[in-house]
Structure formats: structure tokens, C-alpha cells
Length: 634
Image (cartoon, rainbow, N blue to C red; front, side, top):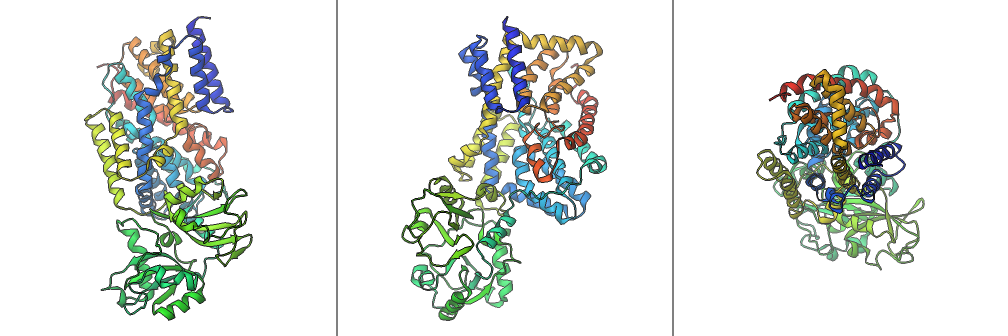
């Protein structure tokens, strides 16, 4: 078997395994890479070339940039603004949702955009009397289309641009994709408003994604917080003034946990009613850029006019209020948004289970210095159906601890897998906190700086992404552990392992053979027919395999086809970028499609029914506009 035939055999087996889906796609790519090396097609340098490719490094850096925006509350804040602006009209909700989603996905990953918006979209679908199934496919399709607005919107754009530059051509500009991306987005919105809504199923489902408010409500029920949360206003004459929490004895003598200490404005607070004071205290940290909050410690000092959020029995808190001369108001768990009270961008809550092998079994929370060791407050302990009221009770396997602490410290607990199991996904909840802080400014500046450097070619795009990622870490938008966790290593390895396949096709003449086949079969009908063939070939691959892997495979072949036929490579490669983002026909085509499938109760046919007309519209619009924007002949 000659080299070209062997390469095509490996390519065919790789595609079949991708479609089969029983083996992870990144493992399939690695097996393919090794087969090409063992078969003598690739040298060691060729085999490992993908892992040093600028495309791979840039995509990894962009994952970090997107995570920095999420962890500083920027992404959640923007999504909240989109949902708030949409209002209650179903048509307006759909239009604003799709436009806002596309704008977000132009600068952060499509997956990150959908993950951030998904819980809010499910909630708003019920609030307007609709169903999630009427909004979630539009959400996924808008995220895919929004990737066509900028160079960094989706990895295929980066692949196509790097293919051009590697061949000696000028790469597409940062916003050049928007020339076709904006018309396609408008087509997608109009289609969904007019036709898509009729094709989308009206399917009820009880499977909800993790939502911050619903998670807080579940915890409030589990740990019986109703009637145990209070706001305490410290009068100037209170005997607590200038005392530390340890000196106050609130925890020791009254079993009261002080969850947070906020400083009120002494000029305005005394004149306000209790309810007004509560609202002002809750809202002041949501609307403003707030400094980082610390969990109150034994050394935290209480000042006049402070507002303390307390947790304890009503009897004990009322007795403390009488003894120390401060005002209290109960927090109605049913009315108040607990996330505003207990959670910030810095501080979170979690349910922590004691594992069977935990070293804490048979020991008390106090004797183990649990709070001091992990930097969290233990607010409640639940054993089976009952709450443990005494802190000196020995812990048992299966006990559930309700803790509050920094998200980083909760993450430390999660990593103590021998001793604890943290319920749910604290990372996902942290991303939903709608609160900006000083680090959000750093994150936004890093993003803007990256866009400017890419748009004006100040530095190569890969270095612009790396600089932005470094600024995110140095600016404390996220630490290195979160940066590494933010990178989708499966995607990175997949892309890096597929790049050598395109090298093999080039070396063995396989790419030239496919390119000549395209030109001879379709080129005789003109460049427009060739463009249509490129669109259909690319979109067919993207329905069943990763769109980035599709672009890595197809882009070099299409570049060669353009050179063989004597036309400009720009219109054909732009069509590769467009069609790689049209995985509308299957739930497995993109991660975003798969993410919305279960919450909306979609089946395979729903994607075909809604996606096929939209894909045809994208093809027609591309055939009309792309040659006008990027002519076939210069």
C-alpha cells in the first residue's frame, strides 16, 4: 500500500470512529497520529508539530481569558443585563436573547456563553409562560453564529486565518468575519422569529440545570434556614461596639454565627425603617463595584452602625439583641434572594458530606479546628432528616455540613476527596453571581487590550491571547489552578493531534488529489459551484465531528483547490469558516447543541427539523454575499 492510500485509510478510520462516538474524540485523534507515525508517513517533528502550533496555543489561552471574565462576574453581569433588557414579550425575548448571545460568543467561547446563559434562559422561559424548548435551540444556534463575528469567536476562524498566513497570504482581520457574520446572524434571528418558532417543539421537561437561586432555595430547605437568618443593626449605644466577635461571646454564649459584617452610612441609616435598611444593605453590594469581602473571624471588630447578618435560633438572637442593645429584623427566606445575602463574587456556600473514610468521623467540628483550617464557617449540620443542634456532637459518615467561605476555600474542600464530598458544582454557581468587583475592570481591560492588539496587528494573535491570559492571572482574576482547569484539554489535544493529519495529506499528495477532484468535478461549473461544494463538504463533516477538527482537515485542501483552479483562496476559506459553524442538524455536532438537549427535552429529529432550513439559508446567503465581499478574482 502506497503512502497516499495508507493516509486515506487512516483518515477514513478516524472519521468512522468520530461518528461512532464510543471512543473519546481526543483519543481517536491520538491513535490516528500514532498510526501515521508508525506507518512512516510522519517524522517525529511532523507528529508533534500540532502541540507547538500557534493555533493550539492561542485556543488554550482564550479558554483562560474566558474563565477570567466569568470568575470576575463580567460574563454573568452581561448575561443578566441581556435577560433584564429582554422583558416579558416572547418575541422580544427571542430577539434580544439571540443578539446578546451572539455578541457574548464573539469574544468568549460558545460553550462558556451557553453555560452562563442556560440557567437564566430556562428560568425566563417559564416566567413568560413559555417553555425551555422554545428558547434553547435558538440560544445554541445564536452562540454558534456569534462565533462568526470575530477572529476569536470560534476556533475554525483561527484555523482558517492561520492556514492563509502559513501559505504566505494575508490573514483575515479580527473583525473581517463580521462582514458575513452580521448578515448571517440577522438571517438566523428573522428565521427563528418567523419560521423557527413554529418548528420548535413545545416539550415540557423537569430537568433543570444548576441555578444559583434554586440551589440556594434547596439549601435553605435542607438546612431549615427559615426563621434562623437575621439582620442586626448595631446602635451607637450597643455594648458590642469596639468589641471583637471573640470578645462578644455571640458564638460561645448564644450559638450565633455572624455571616457578614457590613458598614452602613451613619448619616442615613438611623433615619431609615428596618425594612429600608435591609434593602439598602442587600442592594448596595450588587449595584456597586465592591471590595473583596472577608469571612468574619474571631478578630473581626464590631463598630457602631454596622449591620451584621446572623444565623441562629430566634430565641438566642432575640436574647442577644436584648442583652447587647441592638436592633434585629428577621430575613424572610421565602421573599429574600438568599444569593444576595449569603453569596458574593468572593464568598460562596456549599453542602459538604462526610465520606466513609474521613478522618473527621468521631470528632467534633470545634475540636478539629475545622473553620480555622479551611477558612469556612460551618452554619449547620444535618444528619439524616434532623439537624444537629450541638457543635460538640461527633461527626458521622453521611453528615451534611452547610458551609460558607471563599470560593477558593470551598475548592480546597472539594479537593479533600478522602474526607469530603462537595455536592453540586460550586464553580458553576460562582459564575452566576451577578456582582462586579475591582478585578472585573482588569478582566475587561485585558479583553479590550487583546482585541486591540489583534485588530491592529500590534503583535501576532497568539501573543495577544497569551498576554491577555497572563494579565488575567497576574491581576488575580483567577489563579493558576483555575487557569489550568479552565482549559478544555480534550479540545486542545484533539486539535493538536489532528493537525499532523493535514500534514500527512500534504506530504503524500492526498490533499492535492482531493483538491483536484473538487476542481475537476465542480470547478468546471464555475467557482460558485466549487464554493457550494466546499460548504456542503465542510458542513457534512461538522455535523458529526468537532468543527475545529473539520476546519483543520478541510482548510488546507480548500486552499490547494483554490490555487489549482486559479481563484482567490479568500472566498473559499471564508466559506470553510462559515460552514464549520453550521452544525445545526445533530446534537453531537457541537458542545452547545448537546448542552441544551436535556434541559429542553429535545430529540435528534428536532435539530434536523429546525436546523436544516437554517443551514440552507446560510448556504444561499453565503453564495450571494461572500463573492461580493471577497471576489473570486482580484
